[in-house]
Amino acid sequence: MSHAAGQTAARAGGGLLLAGVLLSACSTGPDADDTAAEDGRLLIDGGTVVVMDDAGTVHEGGAVLVEADRIAAILDGDAPRPAGVAVLDATGHLVIPGIVNTHGHAAMSLLRGLADDMPLMTWLNEHIFPAEAELVDPEFVYWGTLLSSIEMLKSGTTTFADMYYFRDDAARAVVDAGIRAVMGPHVIGFPAPDFASPAATLADAAGFMERYRDHPTLVPGTAAHSLYTTSLDDVRAALRLAIDHDAPFQIHAAEDASEFATATELTGMGVVEALESIGALRPGTVLAHSIYLSDEDIERIAAGGAGVSHNPQSNLKLGIPRAAPVVELLAAGIPVGLGTDGAASNNDLDLFDEMDTAAKLHKFTNADPTALPAETVFRMATMGGARALNLHDRIGSLEPGKRADIVLLDARRAGLTPLYNVYSHLVYAARGSDVSTVLVNGRVVVGNGRVLTVDEAEVMERARGFGARVREVIGGSEPELRR
Image 1: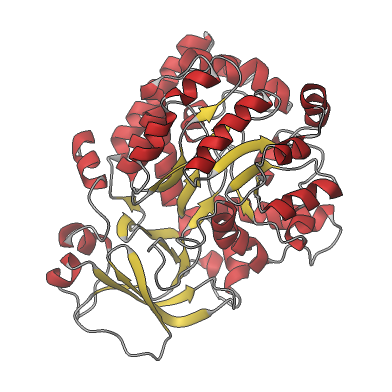
Image 2: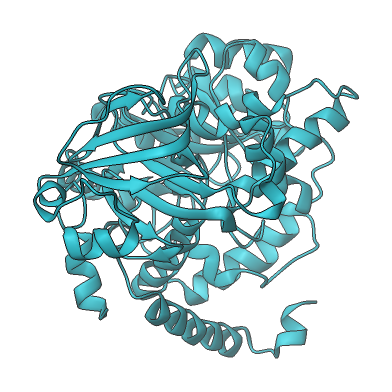
């Protein structure tokens, strides 16, 4: 598929890709016909359906009926099936809600492996910020975001929250890929690759928010980088734009031990207290990382309704010497989702891997094997992330009326056989490579492990080209880039 054709396919309206692509991606049953597919009805039948409702319902041999972009019904194994619909045979598969990645910087996939094995502030100030100043432009953001979207879709992530530059080009990429994303204006307190100042960033930002207000898969939201890079007034301005548009707002918070002292020096308050003072701790605000929190901070977050994005692998790799207090956050009723962070600090975007790490990290740090059981962690990756982004009325579970963001994992391989407990398998055994089929907003975007919306080979070729450009700009050979 050419780049132009990929864009056209990805911009098709909600509902299934039409019969030719659908039938090539799915195994169809005897009742399937082209008319049913064109009518936008699909029955995903015969799998183990993990609903993720409040009751934790699981249907062995169940089915999910999709109509256009919505889930129309969940059927148990004995329920009668509707006639005259296309059928996707899910026998031997786990059928789960799309995974939600609550924090990342998608275009940074083009900087994966550029700088590793160093402290956060050294990594950020001496390597990443300088590299971005030299390298990041609209094409970098478009192709880098497309590369990450492919990686996420193929590993079961159907929604991600992004915080990066050149918002229009990032938006173009996610629409082309067919993934759901939360993204938009991003304020940082020094000249960025796209805008010279926070004021310039926000000057036409309302236009972006309006353009995507009712988009089927792109949720417009705003972000401020952090209180250690951005003034409280500029953070407030980005937040105000989000509030005015009833949109999500993202900010890095309490990721490094130095942040409290910096925030106190700049604002006279700690990080969370300062965010509370401007009304940022409201539902729809996502506090990325949230590691260095006091009991008072947790009380403030709980009272305000904000959510937290837990990024265990990035934090571990950057040598953060403590874990976010996830057990305490959940006990306080705070929505907690999982995030990968950017691929330059993780260095992959597989949330199944992140789930496994999160569960084991907190058992270790709490010296308690009962901490964060598998079902709790899988809920963080689905409904927890949806709640943190304030999108739980649309995504996060397989319930009628919600958007049809659905993932099928092939559970017939040796590493997933036999099956005793679905949550154990999903958190401790499954990997993104087990994903076979993905629907976003009712469209089949991955079939038989293959992305159907864009030309993956073209994206990979473009990414290799950017790799050569990175080497040229940085001015070193590959071994030198690894120092």
